[in-house]
Amino acid sequence: DVAFEMEMPIVKNTQYTTRHNVVYEGNDAILTWNLLKSKQLKATKGTVMFEEFEGKTLFTYVTHLTPESSLAWTVKSRVVPDVKKTMKVVRKHLADKAGKTN
Image 1 (tube, rainbow, N blue to C red):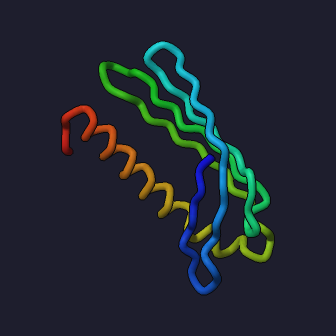
Image 2: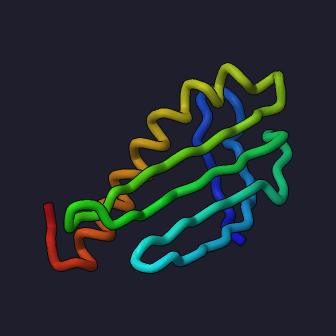
Image 3: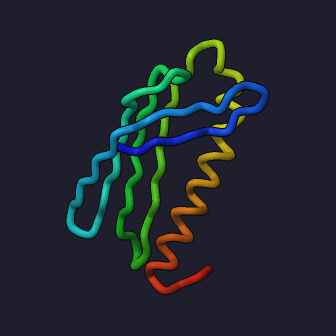
């Protein structure tokens, strides 16, 4: 289980916990998650796939958040920047593990 906190403008930060599952298929890995608990979200689920492609790794990230209706406008403004930040962190981590820093 993984606990998160999303910074929210004006209102209190959103805290939630998800359960993750990893499946390996050959050289590929698929990570899925779904919501366990949150006071501000009705649901969240997603998938990250790491697939071998032309000697490199293809990274596919799909996520869906369903906020409580009163918070929808604040969550929408944070999702894209948070996903971009997450992708950069994952990319750097994978590059560092592979001995590449760019």
